[in-house]
Image 1 (cartoon, rainbow over the protein chains, first blue to last red):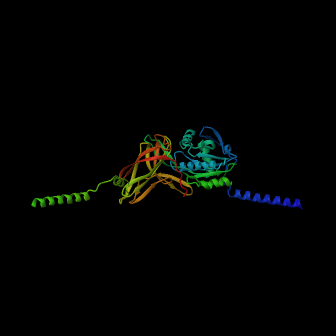
Image 2 (image 1 turned 135 degrees about the horizontal axis):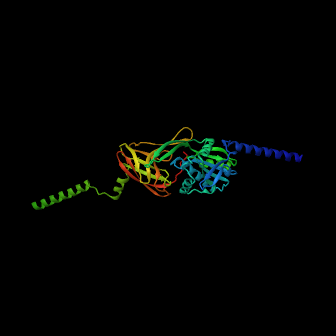
Length: 200
Length: 165
């Protein structure tokens, strides 16, 4: 009788724990599944990586940017920095940061490195990625991010500076490479994403 | 006696006239001068700042155009030695979470109003910077108004988060 009660209690607790676990995960349905993909990209340090393989095993805050952007992308980048600082302050590790350029022809590794350096970003767990435009196009298309060349300005020497109409996006990716939630990048609610990371 | 009366009359006239002249030309204190510069009856630029960026890149410059006058004015253009191209731009929201940016020809500044050049909104676009703008650096620019003429500004470089609201 005693053994039967213990077994019943064990099953009850296990099913309760499973219910809580499943309901938590249901708060973060899969938006886009990159888990079986492997895109060759280059970091700001000219290091070749496979995305998202190289960050698997960690939650990843992903931003989509181009460095010629004067307003939205710097705000998105600064918001990612604020998330990083808050996680560091709360000693939450196991989170990586990735900024993917959708203008790789302009955004060489050196440009990305300078973009990060000017802002004194902590690149210990943050990579800026560029690569072949066909590859970055595939990634942003799959992520549901749009980047359409629009206005241009010409320098006195005739050089054209292209600006993009683009999706204002930061995404939260799980340890397997699945995007679980999207946020407005330039007006991110820092508390919201940090709570999401804690509760995931 | 007549001499005495004449003397008193001249003295009275001098006293009265000195009193009058004091009322006509009040002494200007340093506070008064300050009031003339920063008073609300001016068109002024306030809260000037610029976002950090690097040589060859672009950035945005922000400020408040405070029109304390009863006359409408218009921002026609901007100038700065720090960039190859200086334009008035605005960031605009499209469908969903899409954002765009475009050049605007002018910005109206109605009487007794403040027009804010701010993130996700109007900004002075500095294209192809001739040098790095690091945190704390100062950037000089001139804003050209239709009526007020050229107003100079000095913007401090920083990185500012956007309020979610």
